[in-house]
Length: 135
Image 1 (tube, one colour):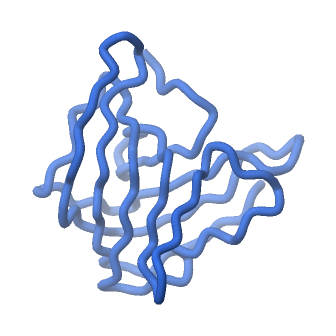
Image 2 (cartoon, rainbow, N blue to C red; image 1 turned 90 degrees about the vertical axis):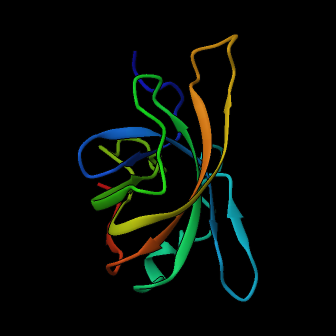
């Protein structure tokens, strides 16, 4: 079964884990981005400005064939591929980073559909974020 939806995809460096439905990045204030429904005028995703040791929280709807993420997980070469913003683009912008999972909360499943389990995953960066613009 494939990941459903048209949103942004989280890849742990080994394969696609699920769809990112929210990104919460701490700053002077908490900013949340509904990445599945934003238009072309959205603010630039600010994870690219984060540095080693900072944290962000992703809400991820897991692929039904993917095991849940745990606090033991460490990801090298993890990516978030945002949904395409320009007609004709091959892919949306890609953010690549290394991290470890600091905290996992949630874990809800809609048993009436194939949308998988949703988890809130707080990650601490262990590398700078490398941004590849939309292709």
